Length: 469
Image (cartoon, rainbow, N blue to C red; front, side, top):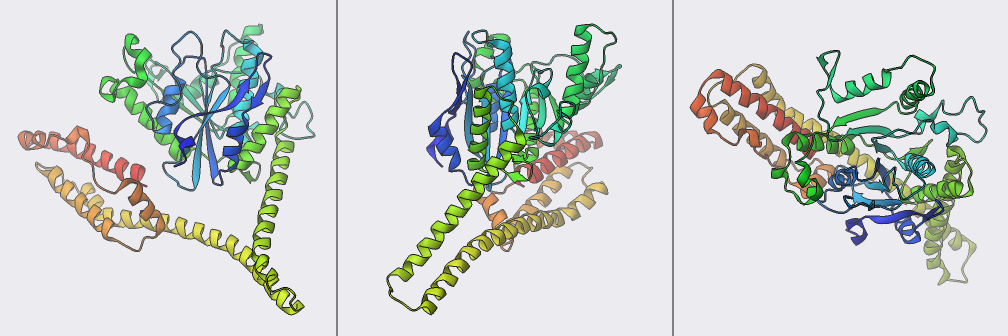
């Protein structure tokens, strides 16, 4: 792994006048990333615990600084490139921002520019505050009337993830319990009656969020630990943290890894080089006082990507043709043979990448199908209630072990399963909730066996289909 993957890198710095500046070394590094990128950004009030969540996504205990001092720790935007835990053909770019509302800066203009820039760079945006009207700060098309602005933002904007920190309320709507997602939708649907400025602002905020971010998700994080220990949150072991908090963090990580989309703009799927180009152009627009236009910047990124692809092709062609130079002077016929070979070599480079990708996807599909086929007989016995008896868990565990063994002995599943086995291994881990086998043996009643049975089923499905696939 590149050592630069092991720490966050300063990416965009803001000076005292509120101007953004790119860090050239980081830009060069990002430009070297050939894989497509999933860009996950977090933005919120400073010292809000957002760096803790980003460190969890990075799979590290520390990295982004947790700001408990008076001054906020992250200045500008920092980026942390990490291998994607579920897809080796992607790279996870984690962006952490300077906290909104920093008292040391011109709060309103800085907050809006920082939010808008982060938004434009993201494929997933994790957020806990609101900006009133983004249409004043972004154009999607080069020629766009004022009354059209904002109507198509949802096509370009990222998945919007709301994190409710230290949430202590009961999640309910009209006295009925609800999920965090239902709670978010309910909050966005509320409208205040009246014509005052505060009423208009309240309603406009919810209208804009509903219109701009049509792919939404919400997580309610309970207090992780006591207020006294919050200052050392990154140093505390999981055993000292609230179990419900840890479960929510796991759900949050799983959603980001599995649902986080590759960053794209229009039909352009961004790799590290395209991402660096678009980030540079957005910063130029903000620095000049212009409203950044997504369409024109995408066109520029496409143009530069095509130019680079052309140059790479010419370099490969010239390298191949250099073999003919040693035979000069030669006949036109021989020279044309060298030319045809060089062109064919270029073509087969593209074809090789295409077929490698197709083979990888087919391998993934066949692996999942194989595992499901192996598990189907057990699933039928589950439905028939064969494990709902004293000792049922031991029987179930034995059957699961047989499935794992058979799966590991299959050798023709291709590169996808080989990659997963080398990264993670493939073995059954007994869930903590059922570590005590004596609970089944001592109880020997239907209720105890049923409870353990369903815990086992749930944990196994999570373990097999989420962690390993």
